[in-house]
Image 1 (cartoon, rainbow, N blue to C red):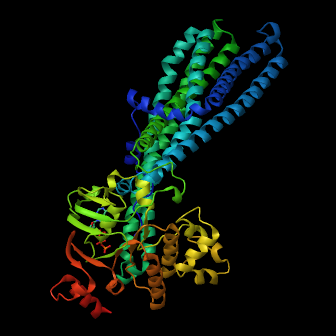
Image 2 (image 1 turned 90 degrees about the vertical axis):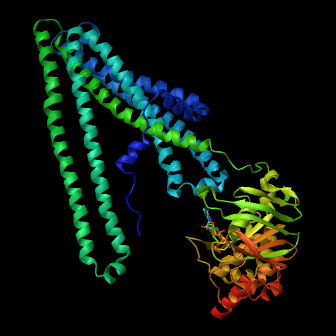
Image 3 (image 1 turned 60 degrees about the vertical axis):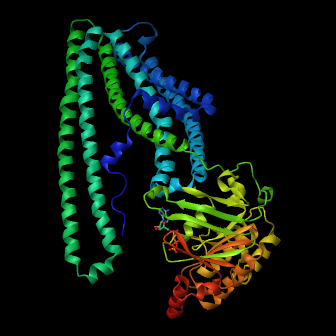
Length: 605
Ligand SMILES: Nc1ncnc2c1ncn2[C@@H]1O[C@H](COP(=O)(O)OP(=O)(O)OP(=O)(O)O)[C@@H](O)[C@H]1O
């Protein structure tokens, strides 16, 4: 089934925003630590921003003077219409040049700082423990590195510049109009900003309504997607009419919302026309009476009106910016939250496998109890004790959900035990260097996931510094050489989404080659549940057998036929060891679970 809903709903979006408080602002500033390495470029950008904002403020002044000089109302160099017009051109050209450098420098800062944030977030993700990922959905995690970071980038490049520009326009504008005429300024300030603020509130309402319309439309799309994907099911249940009715009813909801948004939009336009332009007419009217009384020059009135428009626009702009700053603070907080998460204590100094100390391979579980951090109320393992001596081969068997995978995940220290302890070579794994522990364990998982890349790269993942000869040797031992060579590009064959799709048995042999290359002291084999065809099965079994030589091995077995030769079988049920012994010993007990499992598999096969 398709996922319900696209993007964030209005509710969620509101949640993502952060009220601007002193605390959130202080935390928000922390992200500016990423700007520090580029502070000179940042300051240069700010200077250009200031220049471009200020030159722009000269524009209304010069237009006013142009009008005044046309009616012979000026003196000095400002008398010449042509000179003033040239001055206006100069202002615009300067503004253009300053804006170019402002954008250029801010982009340099924001692109670099944001890449640094992304790099740190990614490194953090990779270094975080498995439990972190279990508590969150993948979509949620990737949106940190995409949406949230984009939000911060916006804040660093556009929002901040806009905030600065609008504030300068507002302050300088108000000072200039006060200088032109205090009376007219007070009159204007009492009316115009109020109208702009009202327009802003109105605008918000429309925005949230149009967002709602989009969400409703997205809901209708979900129905289309779902039904088209499951068209066979729809037809099998002859539910075509039911689906059409469902689609019609969501569609009509979307229309109702869209129409009510249109109602507000219409009212908004009326308000802008009558209210805002009315406000400007009021200012012009009052200004004209002042010109008539000889209190100000006509050119001053023109400048004044232009400044009024600038001020109005910056009040409106600041309102928008407020919303953006809120969103950016929310994103910053979420990014910082992740950056402050505790990493796994792996050894970041280790570069190659050969630098890691080799373990001997004695494993012991001492009264291990465990429940997953996401489900602390369910005890998955209870009081589990067993030993595997170096070089021994042990198989874990038991029904699905018994806890077999959990046992090996604890050995890898993906999670820490809730009770008891696990020792390797007599040392509690919690006191061991995590890199040493994991580097000494090789795992061939049930479902082999290969990375997009060549077969060579996928095998070399076991030991990135391996030579070509070692990779080929590993492929040979894993019975993978022949099938790899049968591809026209051999080891350079691309696998994964953009390349060839390997069969289950082939993927497993690549995973075995990887493990052979890693040459671990301890080996974990998680047998595939889905049966391979008998030829492939035999090749995989042979390769596994080769891999197991001289290593402590734990096999999670699903097909009992494959584990007759192991030293010890542990039958797990309900998180406990219920039987323990060799194949011949366990199969002799007709009441035993193992013997019954054997019988069952025999009957099934
Ligand atoms: N990541 C997890 N978070 C919470 N519970 C889990 C998690 N993984 C497994 N479990 C639960 O722990 C129990 C043991 O699971 P485990 O995967 O160890 O069983 P298994 O014996 O390996 O099963 P199978 O043979 O089907 O692979 C199950 O009840 C399962 O639902």
